[in-house]
Image (cartoon, rainbow, N blue to C red; front, side, top):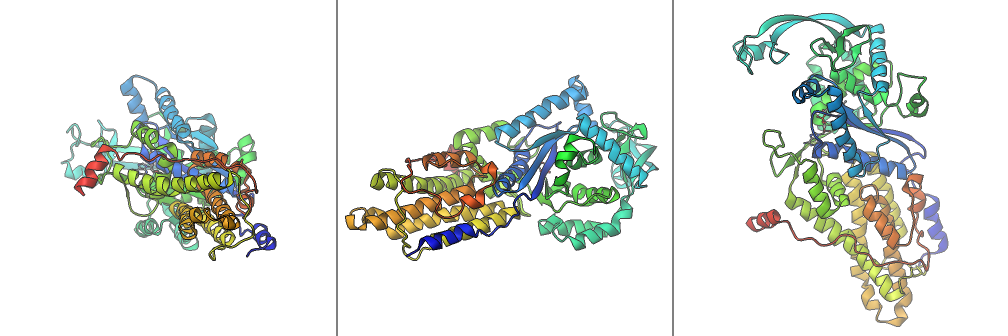
Length: 549
Ligand code: ME8
């Protein structure tokens, strides 16, 4: 038997893994506008979105940034081929990325474009500060130049091609160029120190080890300007020189906060978010984020991000996705999955099955269908439908009283409290699948509890009405608490569930802890029967795969 005092105990002392109002800044890479959006872009952004929604719900002050990387020779060339200006090309393609953000229900607080004046102005200011700090100097470079490709080759590559262009076979020329260089070599020691002092600076661990290995080989200065194209930000002191696109792009993380423009409204409202909590990126761009970016920040005397999280890649049906194979999961393919299985299932699959660890993840239609059926249809959907149907059948749809009873040794307030805390801690560490599987695990526990206590049998015996009420109250209340933890990944379906449970919740008010306290559902509240996830036929290729397996 449990008393009222026992119940209040749990609501009064939620363990908090996050501080209320704690500023949190999470960023995605900014995406190149010379490509169309695909699953990779959707993935990194989903990871950030689920985290951002959860942390806002938990009461943190979150800023979530994404955007597009619009300068560089590639954009200039593609635009030329299409006979439009680079700005026109950038505008058109940036729009498809912005559309992606709303299509997939992302809650980014801003969308930065590197062609925006606010960014350009601050990049120039930041580069000026680097020059003033003597971290950038004018140097000379000599090498094998491919005039057709407008590209320098290393001695090895030039030799391998008999000093001819691998593309048009014309002889390579020995060319000299003046470039501005960033003094990366001067930051060897501070970077080594950073990796020592902040062991979680790069995650996961395997990626950190890779960076450390390369760092040990020694750092060379890097050119940060070119004169062979014009689509970019000019050097503040020498406008013939265009700032290398990677330096321009990395700076988006601070220009969006107005850090180099202290008169701007952005600076006033957003400077509190720096340093970033997480830069979420793909593993192929780790060197820029784990070595060049912190060195630039040290030179600028700005605090360093807390963590650069480099996830692995989605591959498709066992094969790497590439332009040559033409097997990218592009927008129309994503849309097909969303139309068939719901946007929430798409997000659930991304968040729970994605390559957040150090190995790649295989996207297969077979696996996608399996996860939908096992986790959403047979677990969450089935549980919500069972519980709401029984409350309708036995209690006229009115939430019964818990009758201060503890059934079958299940201390539900303690169980739920523990799940909420561990799920939140996992999310804080960006362990999305860990956090979500704890919530789904709670739903599985409710199912096991129903199987153990057999309310459908008790319903036949009128003298067991109190016990029946207590069981169903505990089921629906635990389901409500699990649903809070699942909202960040499946907002649409969970809001549907909340409507069926007769509750209205505004997650942006940051009251997760208050809501997660046991006893939130009021006696007599009205519950409607709900079917959240329809059972679907396995797709044709899935049937083939399963029968051949
Ligand atoms: O690199 N699986 O932009 P980009 C998972 N503009 N994620 C993938 C992926 C895959 N198969 N393919 C791509 C750039 N991604 C630069 C970034 S940041 C200052 C500048 C994701 O359009 C992953 O996050 O090529 C990767 O880092 C990003 O898309 C690359 O996007």
